[in-house]
Length: 298
Image (tube, rainbow, N blue to C red; front, side, top):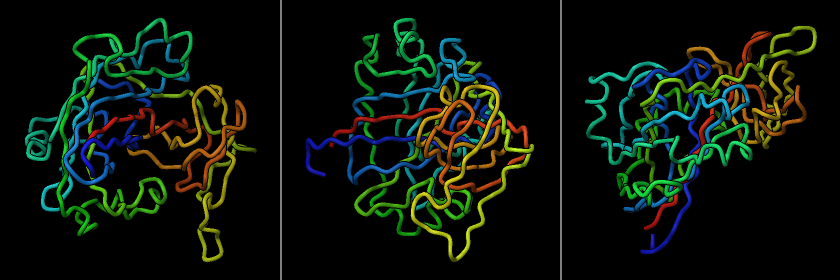
């Protein structure tokens, strides 16, 4: 990149574990999630993030909880080792294993960054935070990151099967881009109480289960593959979901349903296609409840 160039990195991590269960302090919030930026050393100068509310309501304060974000790179083409299962306590053994991979860290005091009451009247279903919002300590994020020059030479080493090879992630995690490098984002809950539940349950006609889409040689591979309407009951879907969200169930190892293509009304939304089926009356959750926008300068 040319010195002085700027880039916006939009990172929407998929959280694959029990997002509807309240997090305790020092739980893994996000295990390492890959994102790409143009190659070369760069400085993260700003952060904007949206954080989904609990059951479609951000004014109840459940998700005004502090957390730390960490940035990491690969070493010799191998991604950072797992920090542990999301929504479970981080261990000193796992964090020691990650130490050499970590290239940056920032503690986020959400209650200071989201402007609290002034925003409650506007962003009722999610919290919104920005670096330099309220406190002089947050004038900029000021983290320098750089990845390996040769990453993605061996893609099978870069990402484990569950991320790149498994069909349930098809089309959800982008393939490597020429001229870009892969960094990794992780997060630890430093305050207890965050809860990304929705109280929104599957309610297909006749109490039917949601079946996975059959992918055959005649299925169109143009996006969306086989758009599917999902019917729910409970919380108004228009207060929970937005186009681009990735939905699944609330189990300890989430089943991945698909990417939202349209929120039709309070009881119906569409996904690009169904990767994994779920049973009737299962809680349907947004597995991408936090979106980060990083302003990067080279």
